[in-house]
Image 1: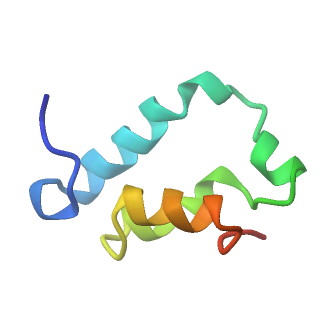
Image 2 (image 1 turned 90 degrees about the vertical axis):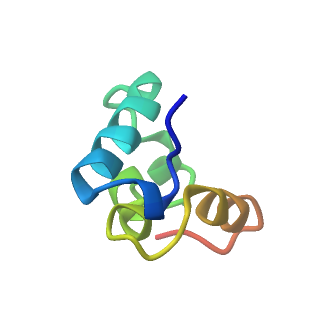
Image 3 (image 1 turned 60 degrees about the vertical axis):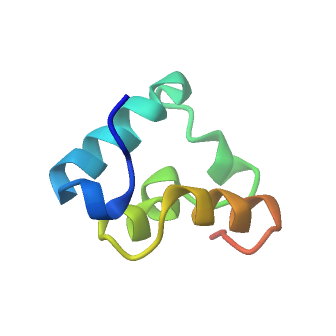
Length: 67
């Protein structure tokens, strides 16, 4: 399996990683319905190369990420 770390990926690869990882969500965007914010915005810092997915997920679980 290829690394998903920011240092090992391009922006385009990170977009594809987020899109494929969240494909189970379909068009639901249930996180937004639960007050977590839209999927696109939650993972924007990863796509932009600012935060790793693991950091975002940890913040989300602690309630620090949201709309």
